Each structure stands twice: as structure tokens, then as C-alpha cells.
Length: 318
Image (tube, rainbow, N blue to C red; front, side):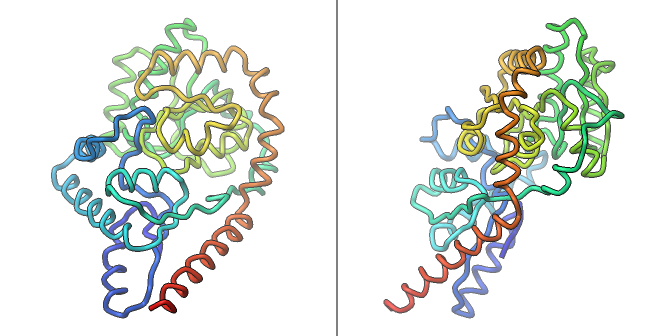
């Protein structure tokens, strides 16, 4: 079963397994158990961590529902095998549960639309110095990008343009526009809205840098797509990015909410873009060849065989 970014289906599956005595496993492609741990965070106080994790939720009802799901997931995760897209899921679950969990991660964990990436040419209609794309919510850095970009504009004397791709809900959009006016950077930021996937890839290829100050993640498709398009990325140093992307050239990680450091990295890439992209060109080709859905299917099939063999051995011992 695959709840896909929502663990609420885990508990019914667990109960069904108990009633039918059929062994089960949970596949969590994007596990939102915790809003991703900053890499340097003190992990000793798990209760504080949980409360901080859900500080982004806007209603007490939403907080309560997510906390119930969180603790149900933690309880169940210690008694079954989970498949996740990121090593960070295992670490975060073990920190919160206080005990070992069995999590397997395919290699590669997710795939790219290789056919699109290879055939798409850099955009001539939408050309930006920097871009932000992904889920347009505060947890993914929707407001952080403006705090970063105002510093870029101040340091560069209004030299660069930021493209924001996607469309937030009305509440977030209103707050986003209010911040644009407050920071006096509305003429340096263009809200592009929704674009088809091939158009998105062409914009990524035409841009100098992807700004991705997300505070929640498991395995970031936005970072992976940018690297495949040979566009460098600046992101927050949260656990998933450290475990999954710190080894790649063209990924620059900075401390969470350190807007000055973030803007400095963005400016470095903008001012040295030809040099940075030359160094990462061959790496982008390697990423395209590795992160295919055929490779993902093979990796997952191997994991399913491991799970079947493991539980067959347990059953035979009983």
C-alpha cells in the first residue's frame, strides 16, 4: 500500500492485516511524519521536535489530526517494513519513535521523465536569472524566497529577475503579494503560475539557479530535475538534502533561515554561472542515465523480494 504523502491509510491497512493475518508493508514515497530535521538540530527532546514540526499547520484541528497520524505511524513503523524514497525517513522515525525501525530505500528512489528532459530546449519566452518551483506553501519556502531575493536585489542593485512557477491558494497568494510590496521587489519577481511540464523543464534549463528553501522534504524532485537540467541549486541544510544531495556538484546547502548566507550563494552562482555549469555538465548526464523509472522499478522489485524472503523466513521459524 502507498499512502503517498499522507499516512492516514496506514492504520486501516494495519488493522486489515491483523484481522486477515496477511503480512503487510507500507511504501511511503514522501513521508511527512516530521517536517524534516535541520541537520544541526539537537535531537534529544523529541516532544519539542514534534511541536516545532507542526508549527506550520494553521488550525488546531489540523495539528491534532496530523499528530494522531504521526503517533499512529510511529507505533506501526516499529512492527513492519517501510519503503521510503529517502534515508532521512528512517532516521527521523527512529528519533521520534525512540527505537529501531526497518526502512528500505530503493536506489534510485524516484525517476525522471528522461524523454522530456533530453528533448526540451532552453526557453526563449520565459528567461529568468533564478527560479523557484514546487509546491507553493510556506513549508516549501514560499515566503523565504522573497526574504532571500530582496537581499539579492539589494546587493546587485536590481540586476536580476526571479521567476516563481506554480500557483498558491488565495490566502498564500495574498500574503505573497503583500510581502512583494513590503520588500519593494515586485518589479524583480514574476509570478508565472502553472505551466506544462515540458515548459517547466525549458524554463529550468534557461535559468542560472534554482532557489529552493524548503523546510520539509524526503527526496526532492525539484532539486533532482534542476540537476538533470544542469541548473545549480541553493537549498536549506535539512537532513534529506544532506543525505541525498550534498555529494553533488552544483548543490549549495545553507543553514535554515540564514537569508544572508543563502543570498550570498545565489549571487555567487549568478556571477559565475558559466564556470559553475561547465563543472556540472557531465554530472547532469549521469543523473539522467541513473534516475530512470526502469531503474526504479528494478530497485523496488529487489526490495519486494527482500520483504517476501524476510517474512517467509519469519513464518517458517514460527
